[in-house]
Length: 312
Image (cartoon, rainbow, N blue to C red; front, side):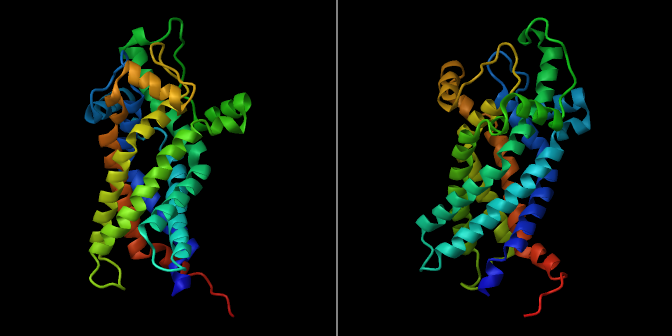
């Protein structure tokens, strides 16, 4: 039974499938979140999530809402797989010496968030460039005063072009721009999310040993995900700003986390740290709700059951 509990291949498959399904459903909202967070005073093109999506469709077509989706699918699949599987791994080992206390649950979440960030930061960086490219193109057309004089309009870069440019100019470190902010976002997110989900899910169990019904796991994942997402949104704004390489002529540039916080506070006020919070909650809630349902259904275990078993 213990081996089944910590079947990492099955958990990696479950997390990957959950990431693919979830991203396909909510990617346009994630794109709106990135563009809203990157807006600064004097270059506000969008007034809300719905306004952003409507203007995106008008200027870029329906598939403009999925700009960077391929990178995001590549990002979220290992992100969810690593985060969910690593949390289960740490919880399993931390509970060997006795009851899994809240502190141990938070420690497991911390470990899961750290493992995930190391692997997925480069893809997160690429996703933000691709998502924000449409906002800058729209600014050239609708708000030309925010674009530096003499700037030539160019085609939106591809993920490979951005990767090559970063590697050529800054090496591997270029792909990890904003790593500190990403750690400051994802580690606290996991510390909040995993213990909150586990305790909410336990409340819906019909008996102590059996699993909670799938709808309880889904609702628990949505509530815990949206709560954690809103709690760390200020750091998500900082991370998005730091990882955006291209800006309008009236927009600030930042040298690091502290510089970013200082300039946002001075030029935009505290409310700027809540930009995109509504969108982020709408993205994260179903992502983790779906992830927990996939875990409940045991899709990974079902797939692995078809593989030939080794004889002892």
